[in-house]
Image (cartoon, rainbow, N blue to C red; front, top):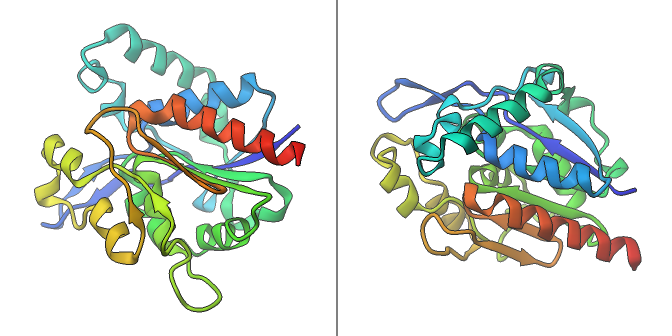
Length: 239
């Protein structure tokens, strides 16, 4: 049975360019869809946050507005999160994790990772252990790729330099109305750091697989990204 470490943000506020604090957290669909797929496939999951603090959902992600007007989908997401309430309220401590014990890591998005995971030394430790090992899988969704910015390689270079990556794009951030007051934009930051950034059409499912690295662009990519992760885990288990 493969095992995955799931790293969730513990941030509940995102500091804006003007100093204001915008409520945030993890994005519901980016946790729910992969979590369902992984559980159904028999993957052993360990959910952690920085400090073991509760993982809080971004309430905006549970509105019909954020789900293409689909009230039923929003209700289903909320019901699923209610079913794993204890897991989210009492995650493990990221600081205590031995990444070598896992077959891979998965990092959902939401704007929360831009606040805490982008500058977290223990996220860096996990990524620096797993990414260079092709027998492991590193995967992330949307703004979860902000966590990649924390990681350096043994040569002092950014660990993900030259890797093909997608994430929530500057175009999508602009269309949400949040780009103007954002302290930085993820797509631009990944590109500037040296990623081979590969955007897809705004709001469409878009997943990039580059060796043992799987990245999804946005919430619509959640299900496809989860299936890509399962495929990569299966391939490595069979090798």
